[in-house]
Image (cartoon, rainbow, N blue to C red; front, side):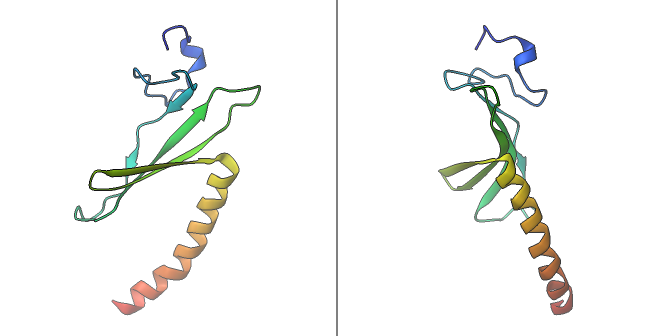
Amino acid sequence: MSNLSNIAHPPWCLRGPDCAGGNGLHLSRLAGTAVRGDEVIQAGVGLWRMDVGPTSPSGLLLEFSAGADVERWPLDLPQSQALVRASQRLLRRLIPLAVHAA
């Protein structure tokens, strides 16, 4: 939206033509998670913020794709923080099993 000043944009905002359109949504570039390159399901994670009300909701944006099918799931900040903690806890349990199996 051309009437938004640079101050209205988070520093990570892509500032493309769709940035902060009618819905006030800011998106960051997605960080891919491909390791091998032959993953059936591609996953990416980025940041989002929506300019609404006195407190702008924000958090992680999860994107999953398989072929042409793409799904985006915005998680608010408390959900994002809980996902990080739960992921770390689960991975700590999984990694010793993977090392032992190798």
